[in-house]
Length: 137
Image (cartoon, rainbow, N blue to C red; front, side, top):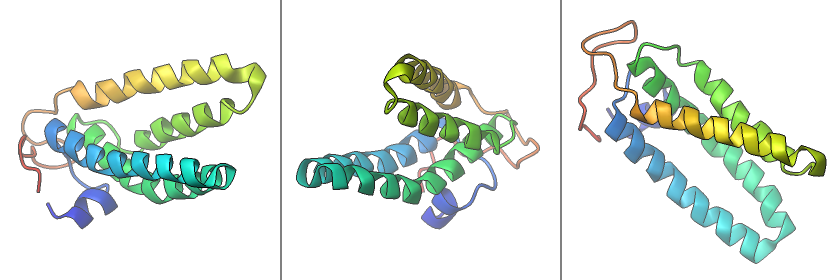
């Protein structure tokens, strides 16, 4: 599996360990850039973070879709998980809805844990052959 297929295609399946590693490979640079943009540019940096998230949302979707498909669930559900995170972030800007934002974030955290921890279907399923559990590239 080459990196273009990992990050730019939602076809097939991905095991838990590769999913975790590829997700970390997206998250750490994003977090570093987020910190730098906010620290150096303030409000403008916050606006740029939204654009940066738009760039990495599709690779996150592709990874999560393959992970869901590994345990024979539709990959399109990844859109709902990502949308939940966006909604939770936007609710943080509305004082009266902070609590709902935190609740949505908590549910999203639990779903993320399930996606990470639920074992894949043994053998082939509707989305392809069983992936190698340890194959990172």
